[in-house]
Image (cartoon, rainbow, N blue to C red; front, side, top):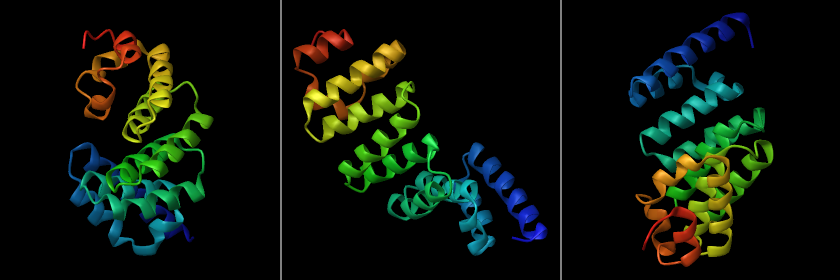
Length: 171
């Protein structure tokens, strides 16, 4: 990549990040798309492209740039999490689970990874794994207990005695 292309890519990444921070994913996407294939050689550019598409709820389209980002930097847990989010929303819960399991190998102390994995195991109707992951998340950061009650992914677990015990809910 030439220095000119590197500079253009850096500027466009900053622009896209700014748009995303402002809640303007369409503008972020437009900025990144103007660079064409140059973006696909850059892990951060691919991630931002995937995030733009994800925020636009174009989950299926977001999968390719997120996977490309992971080809370039395989241990970025934020990309793994975004990819899992997209897989869940296109009906590939098993791939979402695999993505988060990989992220947990990279960062086992991140409560959000365990929490999201508990959600996905719940959707996959594996109560044991869902409760194990939820317990891990709550051990790491008990503040996640505040989110459990409003999380529809846990609806199938609400009457389980261990779930109620873990979350402090009365059923």
